[in-house]
Length: 145
Image (cartoon, rainbow, N blue to C red; front, side, top):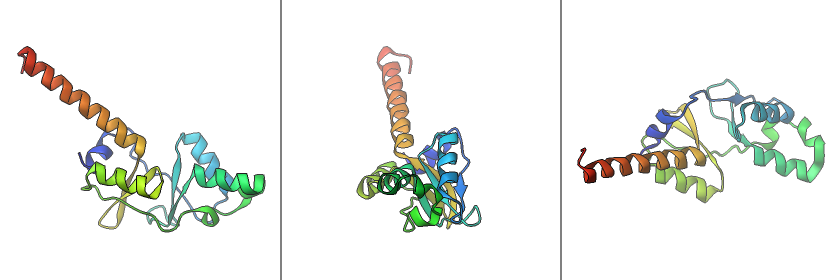
């Protein structure tokens, strides 16, 4: 199971981005409207400048209150982003997320952003994979395969 397989199985392939110069309030609105946990920060909608997660926003809100919503995205984003490639094995992606204690991983191919996966995406794909394997084994045992 590779990251490429996970990307193919995702319903939405759009990569939502926000400019580093946008306000954190705008990022919070985008996260809420799209029911997602992180945004790619990009000055041009293509390049990966950083990541901003709901955790980043909540942490700052907890420290400083609503004033944090007026900050620029660049002030709160993670600039040194760990990435995956489509050919990475899913377990490698999970390990990167676990080691870094983050839940979203941008996927780059030849320096171009091709998607973002979450821990939930990897778990969902693995559950579906196990169900397919189980059905195939059941068919073999019952004699349908």
